[in-house]
Amino acid sequence: MSAETVILDGNRVADAIKESLLSRVANMAEKGIVPCLATVLVGDDPASATYVRMKGNACKRLGIQSIRVVLPEHTTTEELIAAINKLNDDESVHGILLQHPVPKQIDERAAFEAISIDKDVDGVTTLGFAQNAFGFAEFPSCTPAAIIAILDYYQIPVEGKHAVVIGRSPILGKPVSLMLLNKNATVTTCHSKTANLADIVRLGDIVVAAVGKPQFVQGDWLKSGAIVLDAGYNPGNIGDVDYEACEKVASAITPVPAGVGPVTIATLLKHTVDAAEKVARK
Image (cartoon, rainbow, N blue to C red):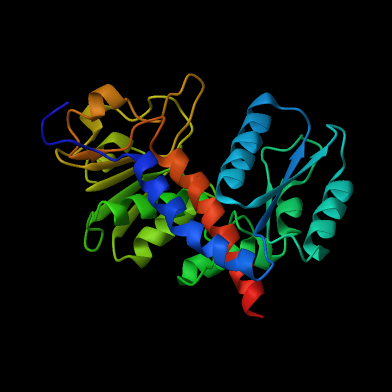
């Protein structure tokens, strides 16, 4: 690692976000309101169960109520939507998170769309996506919002920079591209069909890796001094960039783990508190 490389510590950013929530949660408690996040898990995927447990523990530490709804592997789309609608109608629930992926027989998009926009704290609905595109989403997708939070925390300039996003998923690559564009970056969104990918990545002042392939982005793909944000998480605690090679070229880089991941969870908690405060103001 060169002496100039800044390690963008996600735990540090997440702690700052969570610290800012403590007084807000306490203020609502005085009014008899406890922010509540409901997490829906379909099936028994071990990784998904671990994520749900981590989110529940994070809620508990901040005084946020966590409800876990676990449905069997054979659940139908209709049954899942019915469970989501029940949570939509529950006034004590402020945020709903559908843990994905869901079993193959379920229409995941239909299930996402069933979540009320006022409780879509994970930013998965098409309405939430559209609001994000226009720059006024209350709850943008959590991982893209976490990436922006890291850039903001470390006061990394975005305006006028060329950002290259590798990945185009509707809850990561596309929304983070829009958020960077709304911050006046020039954005190139790449994907599996992009020709001459390395040459394009080499143009990026800011590079976001969100492709879902371990150690995909190589060090010689980067412009010297690029800012690298690794949104990937693969088995073995491996990100989407070759960290060892990329940190030698980058001026700043997120590690995996302890990079974007902790900030994503902190952002989910922040959105839940935001949603509860919105109800408290009514």
